Image (tube, rainbow, N blue to C red; front, side, top):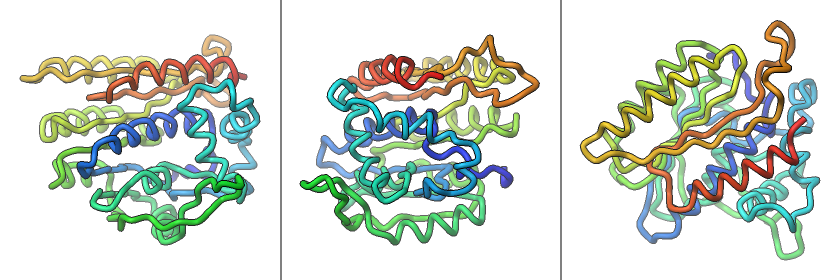
Length: 293
């Protein structure tokens, strides 16, 4: 929906889960020299200012990336440690790196990146941000700037229409990240159709679907995930799937009529890379212990 602005939620606990998982998948793809394609269907602005008045209004980054960076790195799961190092380079300049920035940090020459964002303001910010230098932790712990070797294809159009057009891509090794706002109940049906279409047309793709854990949407979420699992299993060559859910609040204690209904979030993965399930289980346990409130 065009009313949704991720600037209110950037760097929250859901972003920490989603972006740590994204980093793990991208690193797995980079283990081989063969090029790969990344399609980010709801790309957002790419990077966000942590002093944005919208983010300060919700305070959600405080319980997400700010809480993570305040933890002892030596006892973090390796994946979260590496994700924290990545984000700290941006945090030092008052920024939060969203999914397009993480993708640009991992891509190599010969890889392909497609970023889709329908919201006009977010698309304009995204187009500007992909022209900026990337930030990486330097030897002296201060951020160092570098250029991305890949020129991103940026599209201002409906995400689901773009996915139909882009899948399968010429380079048929890669990842599709799908993370809509789910503000509209119809997103659940659109997501199901989109993922099923990708599985049918591009059966080797790693599909990473983010979903919220909302008190008022428990049935829709359960039906969506069950339907996708069944569809993946029914393929001529059955597809492996996995779920990772993180609960940071007690769902039973939430009042459906007041405040946020979000008590956690999850990632649903089709064709998960080797060891991803084990890595994400460590992330889940750590986040539920350290970032719950």
